[in-house]
Amino acid sequence: MADSFPNDPIDVQMRLHQARAEYAAPCRTLPWSVEPVAGWPGEVHPHTGVVTGGRDASPGYTPEQAAEEKRLSITERLEKQRTVLAWLQYQVAQTRQTIQRLEAEEKEQERRRAVARREMS
Image 1 (cartoon, rainbow, N blue to C red):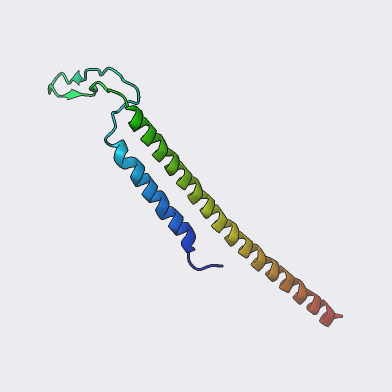
Image 2: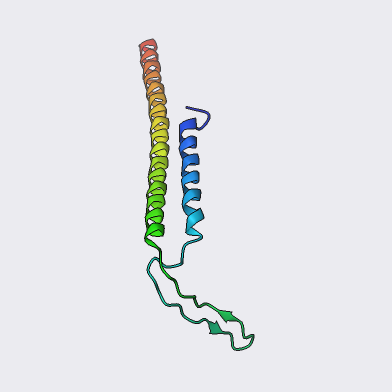
């Protein structure tokens, strides 16, 4: 079996992190709602007077913001699927190696049994 994780899946994982970062950065600057939505007031705590919850109104995304968010979202999802595929390919390769090793062990075990039977007769 391979002793270390292959470079290709690691490279794919790095591309996924890059795509995620490229998606998350502009998303932090977007309005909280895709569509324009009125805000709502928060609730005042009866003992402390601290206001919790509530939201300011959201103007919604501009067409440019919506297009960029969609493009980056697709890129991120694509990289995620590539990462999953690379991991599964690695796992399949590891499983094939394990099967080959076990088949060789089984064959050797059968050979030894046959030798032992011949020696006993």
